[in-house]
Length: 122
Image (cartoon, rainbow, N blue to C red; front, side):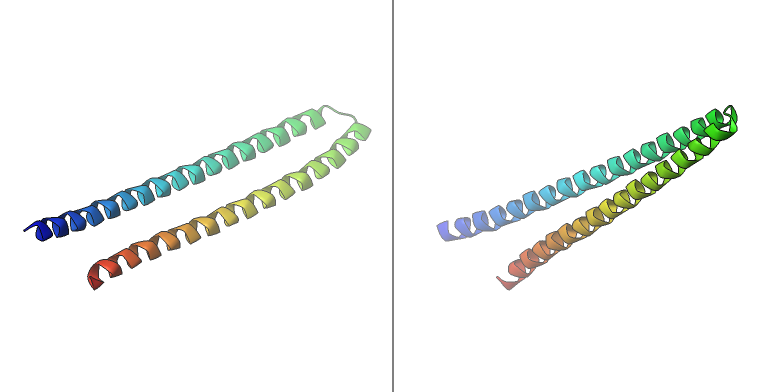
């Protein structure tokens, strides 16, 4: 009888440990999702600020003289190149984050599959 109780406790312990592991995976997945959403919101805010800056510069240029307009256009081109570079860098960061998230999801899935296989094998 004591052996059966020990077996029952061992099975229950494994079950609850697995449930805790799955809960941890779910929490980490949700945290990654929130981090991704925050990065997307930040990117939209940055794009909106850049757009507002471009509009403000256009408005200022309308009131400038010929030479000032030429200088302003040169400055705008430099700023546009810098903006493009920042946008490309953000794109690379986003791609890397997506790759990392995919690797993490695959590792978690492999862990779940290994635990399922272990349960079936015993």
